[in-house]
Length: 331
Image (cartoon, rainbow, N blue to C red; front, side, top):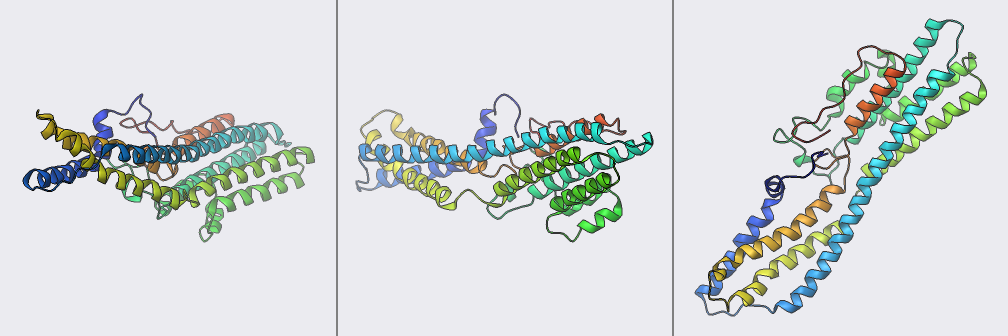
């Protein structure tokens, strides 16, 4: 996620320059064809404006729908933040034992397993899908690493929060985060059986486990169900059709101009093409808020913030620092 006040113009242009370049070359070719031949290839401008309005409305629909997916993802992770803090407070208040050192050990176990669930979930949400921009994730020009590979570092992180024997039970599971929560639920039942808290508090714990499953399922729904391809594809191809006709319409307008503007009209055509494809591109990159690109939901930073809060609640040691932005981007 980009956190500075504005994207710089050249940063924006560099990200979306391809349509401008193609549009300029295309318009120059049409200009040359008109200038060196006797063909009348101009089109009336008025009908094309109707098409342009329709395309703009459709792009607005697509961008609005894409924004809804991104904003829903942020709300889901906001819910994870709130519920995690509630879980930490419940662990702190509900766990009881005749031995103080046992209480601290149990609290640490439950909190660390919850952090392991957060870690597994964010890694799973960063796995590639074929409809995502997997070849355009943030590189060194923006941020060194934002895409977390599932098995390269996950085992190294999880082993800091859960015992190695427990971790081994998850390695062959299709959904590790789901299994970690299941283990947490079983462990809470064992603690209830040992009278570390009463039935009422056990139900409160179970309600929190249910809320975590709900938030995980909502995140997976956005991750695993793409923005409907018929809407995404139609916006792209309507933009292509409209922008391919723009030079013919502008040619009819600028042909009557005897000034230097006649030779500059291909740049005007390229600029219009760039504007429409920039709008299409913004919607395209907002569809998948967990893919690890420019406008992603910063789930690594959010998870780190949760970890800091929970571990400070139990006075844990070696608490990590918040994730820092690099070049304006936050993971």
